[in-house]
Amino acid sequence: MARILLVEDDAAIRASLSRALEQQGHAVATVPAGMPALETVISTTPDLVLLDLGLPDVDGLTVLGMLRGVSTVPVIVITARDDDATIVRALDAGADDYVVKPFGTDHVAARIRALLRRGGPEASEGPLRVGGLEINPATRQVALDGSPVDLTRKEFDLLLALAGRHGEVVTKHTLLTEVWQQAYGGGDRTVDVHLSWLRRKLGETAAAPRYLHTVRGVGIRLAAPDDAR
Image (cartoon, rainbow, N blue to C red; front, side, top):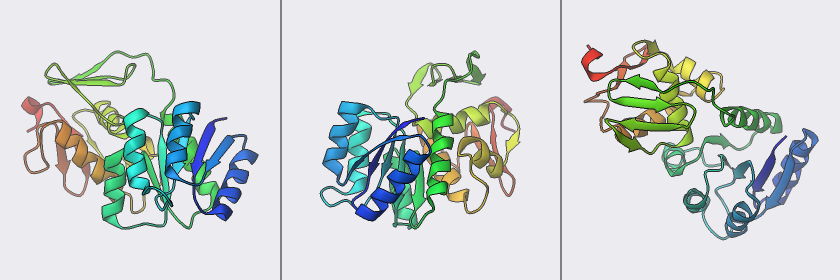
């Protein structure tokens, strides 16, 4: 189904997780450290990377940043670190998802399926326009007032989900389901972090919004500046 690179220094976790994923039909390559992971991504171009943060040679967050310098491969961080600061740093560095240890292999497999679905071919529909924003689902490109906006995979997916309902209030529950394929439960953090970075790239803030408007206790509304009120 997919070619997966597992970067994990714990031999027991590496063996059990790779075995479980192979039983589901995936082709799994494993490495125990960060630098071999970079070399493998460059040489084999896997479909997805599972990345531990506690690696023996280079910290996983540093590896993630280096990966993003050479590849757009989807990355799921798998780690025991569950503090907000690390989660934010990982998402900011380019992680597409974040799973905290201990976890069940079925849980990780479900996250992999969800992420690979999101990376599938986009529908052949024309660009969506909201004020000065232009979102092209086919090419996954965004422009603001004619200038390109560089978004991560999840930032684009989030913006596209909101643009498909522009003018409407979209709940965080809906966004978690559509963008992350997750049931709601402690997911505010995931949505809020991505919204924060998306706002920054659109040249706005939560306190001074132009396109992304928070409706307290309800959700988020994407609207052109002239239609915001």
